[in-house]
Length: 162
Image (cartoon, rainbow, N blue to C red; front, side, top):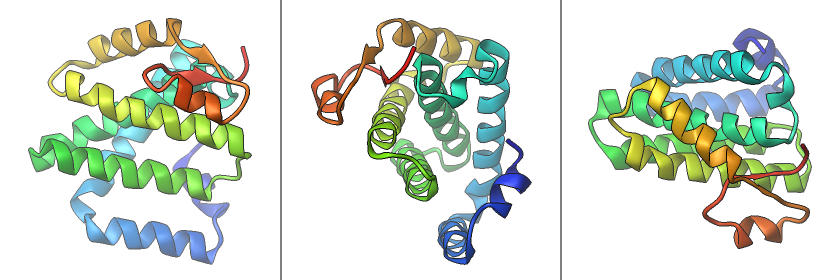
């Protein structure tokens, strides 16, 4: 989905929340947008449109999105905590604004968090290695049926559907 078409779907208050976040750290806007676009390109090439569903491809997308945002913001900030904090704010806000049911939202938030954890290991790693790392993690992903399962599988990516 293109950024412009996504923005058109937001109401005034959603746009206000996004703008408020972006005005706090304007230097992070373009790296975040580049990471988001790159995430979609990677996922489209690896998984087609299936990463828009709730399967393993979606788990991959959320994890790599957070890693890439962290890496790109880290390049500017040179501060791991700032990069992780920014990624958390952006991706959590995305989940709050996205129309999603409780279980898929919990799954996405869980996989986002793991992506930020993976960043700590992948901070200085090139993209093909990041992709390989997360693809390996996806092979170990766990199927969840209820929200509590995300806590039970705290160290594993999770998904809802095959």
